Length: 556
Image (cartoon, rainbow, N blue to C red):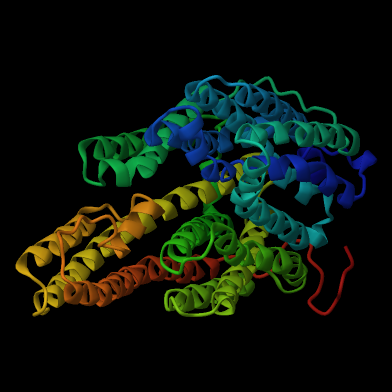
């Protein structure tokens, strides 16, 4: 126990209530995770108010996620060397200070710069908060601690867009950054007061800077490739070059880490079957989960005519169910172990996504809600299992770098999931729109009461709908499913007007039905990824070290 506490920066002689540690790390953890998604809702406002382009402003979001992925591992190791409390506080201070700079930025370029500093702070806060929280709870309650972290982290990331929308409605996108400042200050005060520090263990060995450089460059290449893959093209020269560079750099990093005396990350930890399985499964789970909410919002707003608020309410059942199930799952992990619970969670998520792929446009809200709640329940069962199993497999001196590796795997899964689902969506949507256009032209040609001139104009509208990139944004997708909107028409007779009124509804029904069918495979791809996560979960340990016998109920 002493080693575990000290490794996390908590002195065994000054151990405090784990609930106080939870209170201390929650504000910083919430800000760092929510800011990975909160700006997604602010991009249109920034484009308009700062007179910038979509591509430029997208880096306000992409830059943050890129830096998080690159620095998680390095910050975790730095915390092992310098103390987790120290790195947590330093990261949160940097995050709050960068938020002030972003709020005052005169241009988008400056916002992106300060977002990079924000992400640097966030990369320090997220892995250390996990380590501090799990080290605050006794060994018999590690599953419960992982459940708390899983529930809060899922809630923070999922509520980011809703929080951003509320702050923008109250003022402007700058309020998002100003909001971070008082919450960050409260978090700094709580952490400095409530988390006791262990005496720092001095080490004369230098930091593995070569390892830091190689893994950072490799992760930068693979992350940038995933972010830009659907924009530049998966088989384009830049993307292939980035993936090739990532393979070379990460291979060189592996070779270096295996020969250096004090590596940035001891790759021999992957010999531990449970730690390797936890990393593999957590990546696959996030491939399934992180693109699902993105796709569901597009489907509900563009095709079911939900308002953004109602669509957000439907998606909120994912984090809500996760928040409910995570602590409960943590208790079960402590009693029964993580292996089969993780498998059950993966299967529950698969079932939820399977039925989500079959949701109909005409289904009432409750039909969407129970499906998203089922997905969230699976997530709330699986993530605590993987987190607790992975962390419990680590030596105490490697818990920071191990947490960094687990968070890196999650972040890569998040980016990979969005990239894969968007790629599948682009392919299926193109096929669906082409199929709908062919059906629509056949219907128009079969109208005996319409003149050739009028049919020509209608065909122009169908051609225009077919040429629109339906995956660009919700507005463009709406143009596709309303093909005759904005099409100029020649002078028409009363008979043609009556036929045209009915024809407009028929054409819209054709496009809406085929486009809706195009969402099937993106959701099914997520379902298959969730199912695949059950395979590595089978290799988790049966019981956590120090857990209570199955029949014994322990209080927190």
